[in-house]
Image (cartoon, rainbow, N blue to C red; front, side):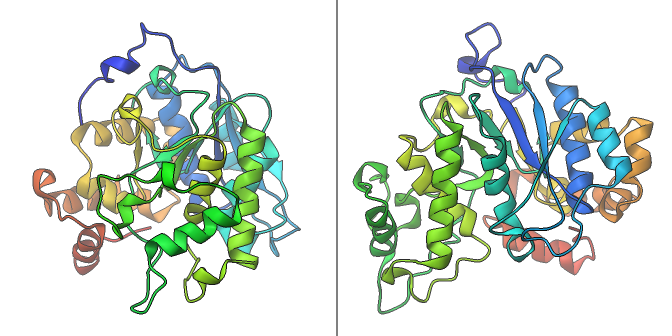
Length: 342
């Protein structure tokens, strides 16, 4: 990972329009992750002028229990400058928690662009310097070919994706990356929803994302028969929402995302195993304040990986210059050593 933002994103050049950062957190793991996110944002981008909004699902609706943040975690998030936004999940909730991000975006969407971040994201550089284009919705390309899984007798990848575009009245052809061969998953628009840029029309983006997700879940085209949508529903629907709003793949000017500005770490075990030294430094600085440390010591992954030495053990297992090509191989090694924590 380079140590500075790319030239197209340096602070002395025009920055993006004012935007809000949105994450979803609730009791347990997501609350602890949100503390790390909020602390790293204030540490790495003290001049960030937008709001950090932590959307908090409320009891009722699609949640049978009480998913709210603990009072202690909520208070610390607010002390770090976050705005906690209550919302009621109507469509997903406990049955598909990843859908919270879609419903939270619907609840927040106003006139300002939104950068959604999963809570398991570390801000490692100034988001203020990333040149987001308000006319180009986009999302993370740090992903693997998880969906769809065409069967031996079809339909093939093109027919499956094509049926979704057709249902939405969209032309799939402009979304294709023709540098990849026919049938290869990377030929088709597919994102990781770990970060999502709505562009200047967050209301329309949120509405499209929700509509497509509900269509895939409740009334899919015939070509999707036999395809499993859980847990990838948010990622299945996202390309259709982005294409419908005139966006597409992020260009090289957004290389700081999943680069020098953010790290979507997924689990602390993976972070220690595969990320570079700068990410480790930011993580340790973000959790160093005593108020944050006191709360995170109550969470097993941070207690064991950061302060119990297991992160260093996980790090010693891998050569960052020659990591396995697939994440599954890293996970398997960590599990074999008793170092997989989530």
